[in-house]
Image (cartoon, rainbow, N blue to C red; front, side, top):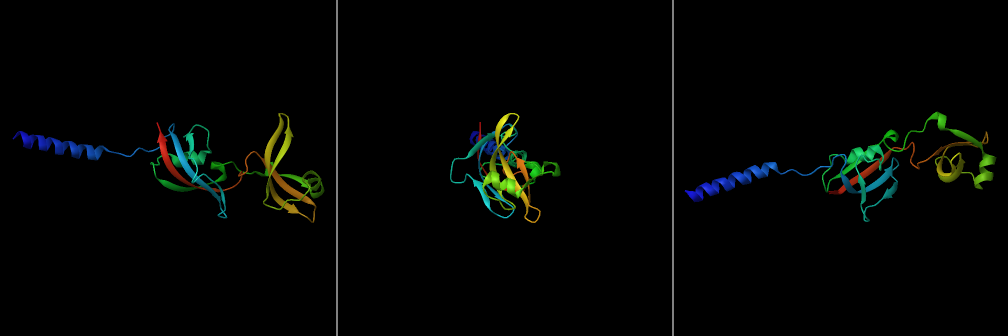
Length: 173
């Protein structure tokens, strides 16, 4: 009788514990390590740490763009997810008030070359706070009018839709 009671209790414990096991998922405030690949809408891969060390950060800690933070919430270790982020979830929109113009002659004098539409150049500009590294995104080169339209941004991928493939390597406790 004792053996049957012990066997029943053991079976009951196994059944209860089986229903209580859950995989840990990422929550805001967790430190995580991820592998990622960043590509643009044309399919070109821009960055990747796959095959290297994972990227570690605190979710919601302001270290990552908002869409990337949001994408890892709820993921489980080993899970891979693909997410496409709008500029507002990534490095920001490009608005009309950000667009500047320069003559091709001025640009040629400053850069020694005339970039093409779509080029992104890393430039140093003087601001009230001193010299700052920025990105010059060439929006239009109008050779007929002799004008180049561009924006200066703090981020290379401003105004871009970005696709990330993210694999959660670990949740660091």
